[in-house]
Length: 142
Image (cartoon, rainbow, N blue to C red; front, side, top):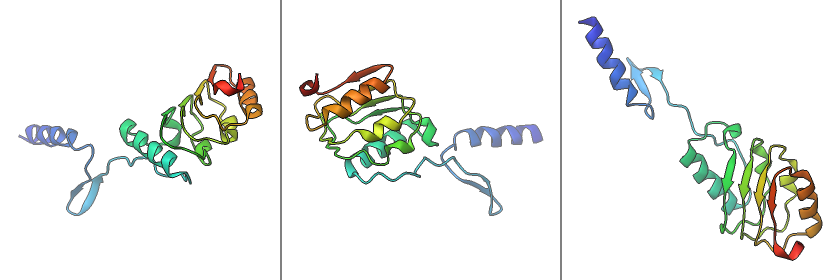
């Protein structure tokens, strides 16, 4: 009988991974919280990152490795360096003017900044030298 009750309790907990569980007002389980310890002044970038965190159930900054925020109206990348394990970034066709924050992301392998025609070509060439992988840049620079 005890085994049956314990088994039923265990099975019911499996379906509650998003809910806090209390017993006699004591918390016995709380689901892991999504990552939210970041500050991105650009609202378009912030909204894109927030959605990626939700979609991918990101719990730590290091868990976010891919960003796809094309056509999002992003103008400023300040704060993106909080996500230190970024490996692939798609920021195509935004309104970027400065890509210096990307130069401090040591794990980057693939970056698409095409369609951002206001970028400084010197910065793009510097980023190309830092990337061991692939850089897709505005046609105005190459």
